[in-house]
Amino acid sequence: MFPPCEMMVRDFLPNVRGVMIHRLRKNGHSQLAIAKLLGITQAAVSQSLRRSESFYQRKLQQMGISAEEIELLSKLLHEDLLESPERSNGTLYAFWRKLLGDGRLCEYHRTLYPQLASCEICMTPISAETLDAKRLDVIRQLEEAVKSIERSPFFSNIMPEVSVNIVYSVDNPQTTADIAAVPGRIVKVGGRVQAVGRPVFGASQHMANVLLAVSAVDKRVRAAINLRNDQGMKEAVKSLNIHSQVIEPSRAELTEDDVIRSVASAYAYLKTLPAAVFHEGGVGYEPATYIFGENPIQLANIARKIARLYVGLARASKPSKG
Image (cartoon, one colour):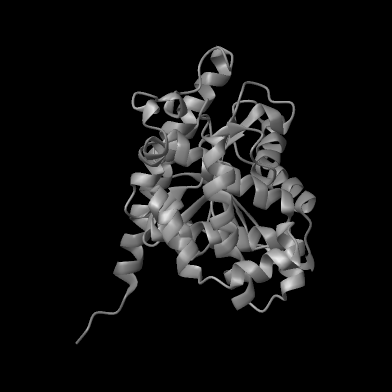
């Protein structure tokens, strides 16, 4: 037996840790602090620092992971480790599963085990045996929507600092387990847009809870996406005749529950889909735009149109030279 998880333990994880140890050290963390963050001993940290960061990067590149992706993963893991060990685990595993699912590690795996020349088990799509027909359809539509977003040359311009997620639920969702999302979120990679992982159920908290709250107001709402919030966004949304509500900025510190309640309350004034809610933010919360619709493909198409309009408006507003 030659399972791909062997590559995770032997090749992927040690070299990702090596990259992360160097990144954390350069950002001023002590060896003891790094050891606690990564769940290893201080001696292991010290030993890893004896080798250069480029050593670990080359090892990952030999597996088929690009330098750009290594930088992306280390950046995301750095952010997540400081926030939550659970979130960093989710990001790491989502990235790994996407590499497997896209067939990116097959060539490397076959160099280790030539017996696997015809193996494609990691690229096998989610089957009806794993999910019922309705949940399978949710995943498939969400995957199509994510691919559409990734193909957009303009979408990165409307992404907020906290990155993007798009969520889609079964009919009448009861918990976040009934809502599919992109684990690890959708992020910028250079000038491109990339999903860190493939959509799965229960992968989101904030966006899933926002969708649950709005769905309780209007059962037609089964999909949502978060985008940046500024004047250009408002103008682009208005030009598409999408009805919207604005939540004024708060001078008080906002909790996630505060945001969710206010978004659901604002949506209650809207009667048509798609619809937008502009949250102007507050202490501890970045302004955000929430777009709601009946399915993620509809929202992906709208987001692509908004992105194109947003870029056009920005170019038109620039003063001409001379």
